[in-house]
Amino acid sequence: MTGSKIKQHIRNLLHVDETPHELAKAFAAGVFVAFTPFLGLHTAIILIVAWAFRLNKLAALTGTFVNNPWTIAFVYIGPTWLMVTVMRYLGSDIHPMNYDLISSHFLKHTAQHTVWEMAFWKNFAKEFKPYVSAFIFGTMAAGAATAVVAYVFAFFGIKYYRRGKKRLKQEKVEEREKIEKQEI
Image 1: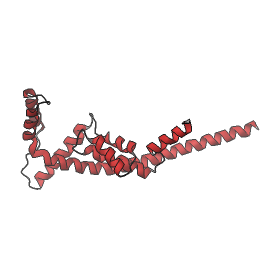
Image 2 (image 1 turned 90 degrees about the vertical axis):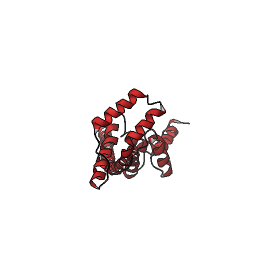
Image 3 (image 1 turned 60 degrees about the vertical axis):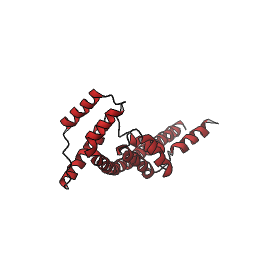
Image 4 (image 1 turned 120 degrees about the vertical axis):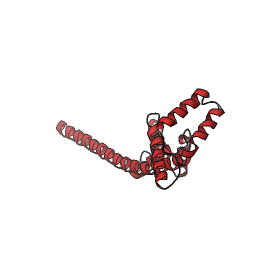
């Protein structure tokens, strides 16, 4: 396989020639999946979604990196807290989220059992059961809202980048033509 055929194969694989809309749509799908409560399955989920909807796999996978060790607290705790607040406002009898209490219970459970023991997860599930629906709906709603914002930023970011790249390419062509005229 020649170098140009390899490059073409890679371009086809990565869908580099896709429109800003297509790339932004794939990125936004990845951001949505990053907010879903299926921690640990995000990569598999987005690759299946990208395959099923014929999205750019690299752009979609990149979107899932919104949820990472540095952002996980914001991705999960913020939307859960917001949904608990909304649920309480709508009349649910769910207790407000008290982070000091939650942290102390979590530390108590980790002191009694390791996360590899089933007893830890049974205690954890019992302790945090009231917040499960707030966690699921909160993260999904935040994921949808964030995906819309991510689409807009990705779309205009890609257009801006490509416009600058096109301008640089044009400037190089003009510079080359100028040099060629001077040589004549």
